[in-house]
Length: 237
Length: 255
Image (tube, rainbow over the protein chains, first blue to last red):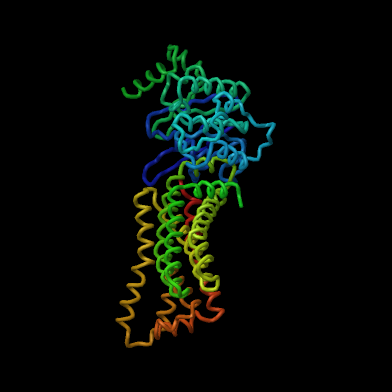
């Protein structure tokens, strides 16, 4: 559960987020969409504590992100571009993150690790991996510690069709377990079967927060992409 | 040592540039010490190389490493780890790796070809310079988002302490030659970490007399046992202050 309260974020004169109020409840997969520069990444970075929250507040599992860092125990994050120290192997990288998390062995979720077959290339150095394989490592790390909240930034961008199918199924499975999943994506067609709620941001403000079924009936379309495009066209007029 | 610091340490030790740096230091020290029979003279020649190369490699390599790790830092910060810990461990990993490279490259030849008494001060100042310039690198890397600008700042810091600072002192010395400024000059020279490292080694070698009158002043100001302690203390301050400044900036930075 994440609550965003009156969040305003400025970068110099540029207002990235403008008095934002949002509530993300558990058991949903939420798509965060909007044009470039609308504040998606800024919002995610504020939730993760990568951007400093000054005006307004964010509550993660009822704890303010301003107080201390421990709320991040509940969050798994898959970045858009993962870059890791080049000379360490996949195994060492995963082990290092595991050590910072301190989650006991029997509570680890290694399903993605097995389905991506990363153990076969465990001893390869991170610097020699292709972009897609690096993304697989990032995905494994995001899901590994059974967090209550999973944030995915353009998750399927670099993955091959097989891997993105595996990831999609995993996302749906975790959502059904009652976890909160936040996805940002430009590939609207990919979202159709995963997402249960849409948050549309523009110029730092929430334009729409609506469940997918409501959106479809309102816009009389069968795909998320079509309804979003109809909204965008309406905005232009 | 913390897991993150150890991870970064091992990553850097396998880095090609650091391996090259270690081998380069080894070849230089080995050839300088092997060619010269007089330990003191050899240590002096080596001192000049160390004072130039160690700060340069430490500051440039660390700056580039911090910039290259920006996404990794973001990933670490999305884990339940406080910011202070992440930044400190990067510093710890980087400086340990560079100290390690210096010890392998210079320490071993000194142990083999020279004596520990003459080489000791050189090893100490090499270690401290590695740490100081890593701290400067972290400060310049955090103060600019633009990589080219950050590396530029680093090069300037190196240039300033290695060349410009001494130049300014020389000009001052000529301008105020008629006044009794020796004490002030010695203190000013001691404020520059590179200059202080040089004075520190020269005094341990007992060749301050070669520096003439200013050498006598140095002997007076830094020569005693207490002076050695003070020199190390000032060098440590030079390591801590830039790092703490960078930490303060890192703590409130939007990544």
